[in-house]
Every structure is written in structure tokens, then in C-alpha cells.
Image (cartoon, rainbow, N blue to C red):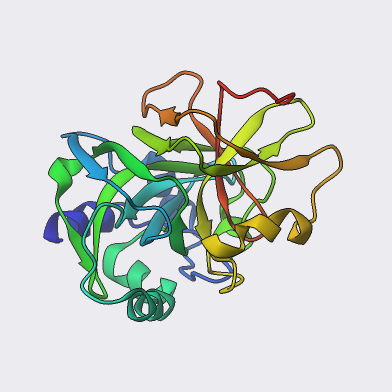
Length: 269
């Protein structure tokens, strides 16, 4: 906890954000901002969460402005950590968090609360970083899981998530879906397939895993995009590597469901 506070505090800079406010407009502060990196992904350690389909987890992103107006930051995730209270209580704790408070405590140009979330995959394994050290915020145990990039930090930090738009998510993970499970996918106009690995209750608390079969009827897709569901006849392993080139990308739907690029899937199947 102290290490994260020290690292993030040294990254304190200037920016103007709508919902996570910290205004310092001098050229000196802006120069300092552009010179500061995010927390690097070092000291990896393995994590695994088995039989997690439908279970709760939470994610907090500490974001920093880039010279082009985009954002880059670290995300801290509770996935694979045992939670100290039932889902409803943990959801309430997470919803009660305030960006302004965390920005003052840890620094950053914007804080984004990704969730409450539920895993759609059956099992996830991969790497956390910084030696799997836990940061406990509002009783929620979190570990450093990766780096996230967005094209517009101000819009992102104001709560207006870019939907149906690929964004970079640097992490090392493997999401496993068992044979016989139904998976839900978005297909871009170019034919790229993105498979949902987690859903969000942030916008619609009724957007539960039990209601995923009706998701296609509830989405409003941009022109050229498609949604489909399909039942797996064999296990699906959706992988990502933090150092991949090109980097791993994800897409969000309008309910902030999270879909990862699936290089092994065909738009025709």
C-alpha cells in the first residue's frame, strides 16, 4: 500500500478532467506530466481463479494524460482475491468510492472505476505484477494487473467510456471457457471477433450473467457491427500477453461489457 502511494504520488501532474478534478494549468506542470511514466510491469507473479464464472470482481484504473490528449495508466484488480463480504456488500463499497478522494491520496490525472464486474469466463490464469502485493481500498483487495490506454483521457475519466472502439490493454492472461458454455461476441465491420470475458453492473445492475441470453436484443450497435452468441463444442482459451506486438485490444459495449480480441475466431462461424 505504501509503495503504491509513493509511486503514484511521484506521478502527480496537471490536467483538467470533468469528473476527477485536479487542475494545474502551468506549462511547467504540463512538462512534468509528460515526463512521468506509469508504474512499470515488473516482478511478475502467477495468479489463478478457477470456477469463477458469475463471481464478482472489481477494478480501479489510475490514469495519466499523454501529450496527444490520450491516457495511459495502471489498473488494479481484485480477480483471484478472496473477498471479505458478500457480493452485494462489496458492490456497495465499490460504488461508494470517489475519484477525487483517491486522486488526492494516490495522485494521477483521473481515476476510473471499472465495475462492479462479474467474470464470464470459467477460469482465468495469468500474471499480476509488483510481486502480487495487495493494495486494499475500501476493504477491496487489489493487485497490479496491467496497463491500459485510451484515446481520450478527459472523456474516459468523466465516465464516458469509449464503446465499440478497440483500446489497448497490456496484461498477461488466459481466460478459459468450458465446452458447452455459451460465449457472446462482437464482430467489427472489418471482421475482427471480440469475445466477452466479463460483464459490468455499473450502468445496469440487472445486466447479470443470467440475463446475457437477452443481451443481443438490448444492444444498440454502430453501423457495420454485429453481435452473436454461440455454444462451444470445445474449450476456448482466450489469451493475451503484456508484451505482445501488436498489443492486446479490448472493446466495450454500451453496458461496459468487456470483450477481448479473439484471433482464433472467425466472423463466419
